[in-house]
Amino acid sequence: MAAANTDKLIKAADVWSTTLSSGITDSDTTLTPATVTGLPTDTAVMLVIDRVDSSGTKTPVKKEVMVGVVSGGNIANLVRAVEGTAQAHTAGAVIEIRLFAAQWDKMVDWGLAEHKQDGTHGDVTADSLDTAVLKGWDGWLTDDDTWVYVTAATFKIVGKDVTARFAKGTKLKFSQTTTKYAVVAASSFSTDTTVTIIVNTTHVLANAAITAPFYSYAARPQGYPDYFAYTPTYTGFSANPTSEECKFSTHGNRIFVRIAGASAGTSNATGFTATSPVTAVAAALGIGNGVDNSSVLSSPSRCVIPAASAVITIHKDFASGAWTGSGNKYCTAEISHYF
Image (tube, rainbow, N blue to C red; front, side, top):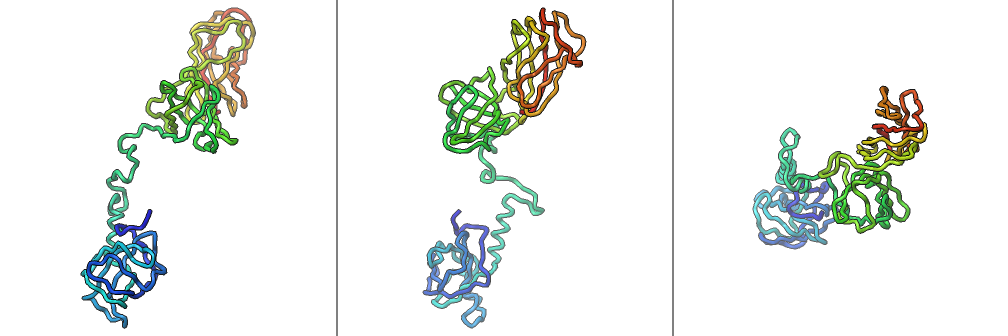
């Protein structure tokens, strides 16, 4: 910010003094010292004229403290009589930088604006916080960059590296006729930043213009869904379970997956796998409740996803038992893993 004569925090200059090049009246708002070398230019300066005469004798009747800003070889925008009386000063008058009561008081006023005497924070003002916070921030941050559709799983920001903005788990909000939501699976940069989302069937990224883009690191930004639906890929069936209720939610870079079929599929193998919406970075274990050959299992099913895979293997029981390769089977399973 530019220096101003209203500054409360005012820099000084060590043992600085000079003389007035030409006289000023009691109402002039610019003075010309013999030199301005050593004076701060990023804040106002507070100076005193005629505190002493050229021989060092105090002249309290003539003393005047004023505030201004360095402008070329001048001190401009002067506020007169900060201390003492506004009056004329003749060429050769001594000008000094010292610590003044008025300067100290300005610093105290600055500190007490939002602090108490014990140093704790007092009342805040509209200038001290983002206006959106004071009005009730909804948790979303506006993205000024343009998101460009690439695939149903990716979009890009052209010509710049903003991968730090789109870390794993970042929540997204955007518009394609309707408001849509997504979560970041990964981002990478090569000429453009490519953002990969976890694909869901609730809010589909379409091959269309993406408008009103927002992102959030909040746990629950306004409007963000509790979960997303997705469609897993199964193996072990000639006819997959129907009326699926497969969902996921995320917390940071951890995903919570629920695989459920309201009606059983037709088994054609002793194995049973279903895909997670995103690849795991570390192995994880889950649990389920299954039906095998039309019989409800009395023991829980064991669900495993290995590192670097998106395939969840669902075992009949915790002893990794095999399923019946015929009849009906399904499993309501839950597993969470990092991505």
